[in-house]
Structures are given as C-alpha cells and as structure tokens.
Length: 224
Length: 146
Image (cartoon, rainbow over the protein chains, first blue to last red):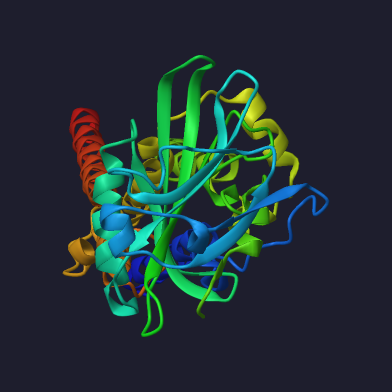
C-alpha cells in the first residue's frame, strides 16, 4: 500500500470520527431548537387570572393591529400597567418577580402582521430590535416551532447583565412569531427568564420550565 | 514516537476534549452528547463554574473542533507531496464553512453566526501555523544531527 493511500484512509477515518463527534454535539433533527409542543404545567393547581384582549381598549398602532386572544397567567404574577398603552409594542405583559423585585420570568404579547413566508425575515428584524435592549445579547437558535395548536417561528437569545441588585445575572429569551391568516392578525410572544429563578437553567428552559408553560398552554386566539 | 503522541494529545485530543466539556457543562442539555451523561451535569453546571460569555460558549467549541481536525490532518499529511494534501488539510475549515452556510440557507439546524466562521478560520490558521513551525523545527534539528 502506498504512503498516500494510507494517509487517505487515515484521513477518511479521522474525518468520519470528527463528523460523528460534530453530530453528537448538534441538535437532533426532531428537536431543532424547538420541541415546542408546550409541556404540561408543573403545577396545574396554581391560581390563575384570565387576560382577554377583546375586553381591552388599545390605542394607536396596537389598536390598528389588534388581535383577539386570551391566556391564563398565575395570579401571583404582576401585570405591567404600561403595556397596551401609549407607544408600548405589547398588548400585554405579565411578570413573575422575586421578593427583591428581580424578574424571574415575564411574558408579553406584541403585534405582528406578517404572513408565514415572511417569518424568518421578520424574526431577523425583531432580533435586531431586541439586540439593542439587552447587554451582551446573542441569538443562539432559530427555526419553526409550535405553541399549542399554532405553528410559529421562533428564535432564542441569551444576554448577561452585570448590574443588578443580585450582581451578575443571565437573561434568556425566546420570541415566537405566530403568523396571521385571513381571519385574524398574528402576534409575537416574547418570553424572558433569568438565572435568578432556580427552576430555569438555560435558554432551552424558557417556556418549558418555570411558570410560563401555564400561560402557553392556555394561549388561544379568538379565531383559529 | 513519544513526541508524536504528545503532539497528538496536545493538538488533537485536548482541544476536542475541551470543546466537549464546554458542550457538556454549559450548552443545551438536549444534545445527544449531553444525554449520554444524564442529569448529574445539570447539578454541577451552575454550582461549580463561573458564568462564561455566550460568545465563548457558542463559538469556541466549533473553533476547537476545527483546530483539532486541522491538526490531525496536518499530522497525517506531514511531509507528503500529494496533490490532495491541501484539500485534506483544509477539510476542517471547509466543513465548518459548509455547516455555517447550511445553517444560513436553513438546510442544517442551528444558527448562522459570523463569529463561528471567524473562529473557524482563525483556528485552522493557527493549527497550520503551529504545524508548520513544528515541521520547520524538526528539519532544523535533523540538519543539526546529520
């Protein structure tokens, strides 16, 4: 056997091992970012409050792009009074905070007018907007997802804040774009969690651990 | 022989191991490699390790993978005059670019990141540079001996 043939065989073998290794550290195809059929809430006995956008009054852009939806959120969560008013991009924002007023999780619903085929492009625009609002922002995954019965498109991001009352904190986010159809407009679901919460250990836990699953499980548009 | 083993450990196995450790300890717990080691990692992950910037967590393992593969190919094709030498020695970089561009096109799961591409290019360059230095040094030593 010639020397170059031996080298080629060794190279092919080495390459195969490395590709195998890369595969082992890649996302599984059936879990591309998004094993996002929402898991059952961890504690279904949690007292909840219903939010129904149809009974709310919005102004300006929010009124223009209004879509009827509802969800239940734990009663212990706090609703942001500023959301749904003035220049707010969100119809509603609810938040779970620690005793020392650190955000553990929050969930907001914003307006979104695009159709399904535009979602990657619109996700990129939203990503650009969000990147300016979070320190050390980095988008870490992107792809199709599902929230309840709704097909959507999501991206996840990480951020790191050094200046909180608890010192350094990791911030993990997930933005889900649900496209509109002939019957209704779409919506953006924005979820944030921080490392101040013991149940959430990373960006992949956003919306699947903690209390956000209670919200996601109950999220419905008035028109399918 | 001992020198080759030492170089292989330092330039091929150690970077690969370090990249794997980063994946295992800090990255997605749903990856196949993480599932092999069960949930024990989720206990030590936050407790024993400081917070690491996302750019390191998400780009360094890929760069280490490229460095390791390029070093391996450099070892294998050292002193060869084959026309395929350049192809094999750049295979790590080519694969990394293919993965990233596949992600950009949406045919490979994951997120395209320019930082990953830059890291891969730097890693491959470093591996080739260090290998060339080592080969050059070996020649000088051989010349002195002869």
